[in-house]
Amino acid sequence: MKRLANVAVCLTLAVAAAGCGESTTAYEGLEGHGGEGEEEPTREGLAIEFEDVEYNVLITRELNLRDVEDRAYVPPDLPEAPPGSAYYGVFMRACNTSDEPLPPAATMRIVDTQENRYEPTRLSSDNPFAFTSRTLQPGECIPASGSVADTAPTSGAMVLFEIPLEAIENRPLELEILGDYNLTERKQEFTAIELDM
Image (tube, rainbow, N blue to C red; front, side, top):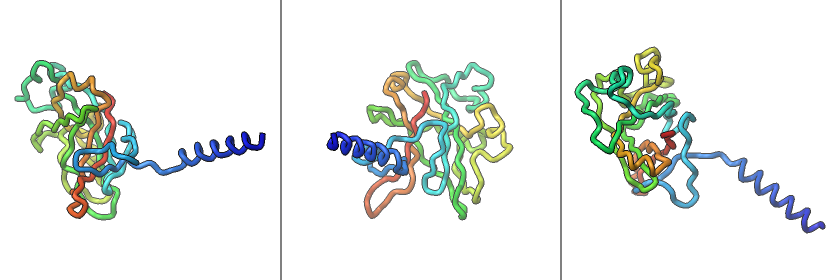
C-alpha cells in the first residue's frame, strides 16, 4: 500500500513538473526543426516573441481573386493561381518589444509535414497590405496603427504564398520566421507558427 502511495506521489510530481516549464518555440537548425528536445510550434492566433519582435499570425486563408475584397490584397496584374495551386494570405502583426530600433525578420517560408518549403510571392512595397520588413521603433508595429492593413477585416499585414493544393493534405503547415544565421555554430535560428489552413 505504501509503495502504491509512493508511485502516486511520483506520478503527480512528474505531471506537475511537465506542466510547469516555460515553453519556447525558438528553433535552431540548418534544415529546420524537429530535433530532440524541441518544443511544438506556437498556434495561429497566439503571439510569440523571437529576437525581440513579437509575431502574431491573426488569420490564414485562401484568397479568391474573383472576390472584390481579396482582389484588393494583391497586385492588379497577379494572374490566377495555376491549376492545382491556390494563393494563401498569411495576415500577421509584428511589434518591436525591445528598447532599440530593429527590423522584424525579412525571410519567411511555409513548410509542410513532408519538409517541402514554399517561399512567399514577392509583393511590391507600395502594396498597402504587404508585410514589408522595415526598422521599427520600440513599441512600433507592422502594420502601422490606423493603416489600411490595420483597419481591414484581416487586421494584419499580408505575406502571400502560392501553395499546391496537394500540400494542404500534408498538414499541419507551419510558417517559419527565419532570424540570424549563427556563424559560430553554423545554424539558422528560426521560430515556427502552426497555420490554421
